[in-house]
Image (cartoon, rainbow, N blue to C red; front, side):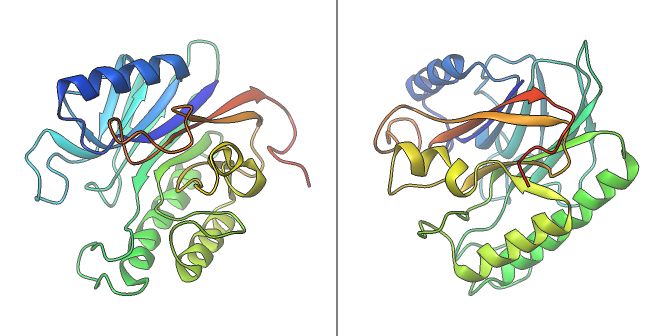
Length: 250
């Protein structure tokens, strides 16, 4: 199974949609979480699940913070932050159902609700709300795998790229508290590996005790920098295989 995420940076122009769709076709993901997306951009997977229309009210209704796309039937699950997050339960033909949670966390100088953008306040408050949802999903669906992916606006590598020490520490602690691990962190970061000094701020996270093992991480497009004609972000993907042990080594 391949799961992927890409911040497509408001794909309004038809030629940019076509070029982005061509890149997505190469990736051939089973689950794709698009962020900063648009309803008229369809990546070729049949089943969608989106956050609220219009983002924060600063964009017209076709714009969305997050849309989950799946090649298998899904059921939408309500989230506490219906503007910047969405969640779904996916039903494979030949396997157990699993959960996908798509997100965009605040970046430096952005706002979220009432907290001020200065410092880590907005990031911290938005993350707390999402942590509540991650834990709730684990309680309500204890047998389901959980994947959390999207635009975290924070790197998880040793040499900093984007974000702050404070928000990095908050994110690392939140993942640990929820029993999650970022498959795109550290030396598993495909952008830092293949296009330095860039690094992942769009992450894919799984349960630490997952029954799936991460076989490969990749980034696209295959370039030294993100081609601005497509997006200011690389896309990232993780290929998973069934396994009965932990998703990463001890």
